[in-house]
Amino acid sequence: MDAIQKHLLKEVAELDALPVGAYNIRSNGKSAARNTTAEIDIVTKTDKPGIDIIIRPGTKKKSVHIPVIISESGLKEVVYNDFFIGEDCDVTIIAGCGISNCGGEDSQHDGVHSFFVGKGSKVRYIEKHYGEGTGEGKRLMNPTTVVELEEGASMELQTSQIGGIHDTLRITNAKLAENSSLSIHDKILTEGDQHAKAEMQVDMDGDGSTCDVISRGVAKGDSYQEIVLGITGNAACSGHAECDSIIMDRGVILASPQLKATNVDAALIHEAAIGKIAGEQLIKLMTMGLSEKEAEDMIIRGFLR
Image (cartoon, rainbow, N blue to C red; front, side, top):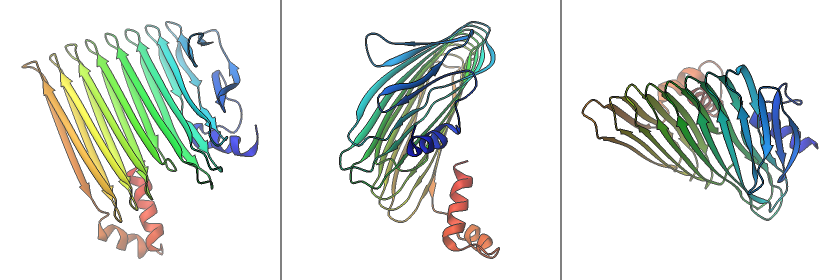
């Protein structure tokens, strides 16, 4: 890989070298490196672009990396990755996509990730999106995440768009069975004339299921963000949705938490807040020797942590 590709890998997956364990690195539309293990198999799909990641029952304390990087201007792709996690597993999945576009044509990655999590399994999923480049071509990403949790399974999603993406539509749909739990922490930073829309829908279909959905956004410049957080309680369950955003310059943020209960024992809560950076926070940091911009950057980093 060249220096740009290595830099993208560092940004989205914190990789300085090939990781230990199972991995599949996709670069400019092709598989650039792959490794499987006794517990985790990675198989190329035959009917459409993408891979199947098969994690055997009982796999514990293992990880798999599946980052995607694009450094060719004009490259557009749609990739389908399916994760089959067996029963009684405890695994971490590190994904993410980075685009460097220094040309005049748009570059785009659309990824559809589907997770089928077996009974009693625990999954931690980390996905970062990042863009850079000096060209006039746009950097576009449209991730779709589908989650199905079986009885007693749990999943933690840490998803973020950390800068440089012109337009994105981020869709997450989840279905929860009995005593399963889902935690989503989504972070978005937009600036300039960037546009981002995030739609999250969680259906709690099993008694004892729980979910915690948190969205944090910062809109700078003339950027626009729209966030829709939906929770449906179809059983005796507990759900929480929170949207917390900072608006700067001429940015626009539209936040819509939506709750639906079809069961008398469904307990659902939503919160939403949009505001500017507090002046006293800036003043306090500036008295410590930081410039106004440095103080703003520090506050934003802490907010999107």
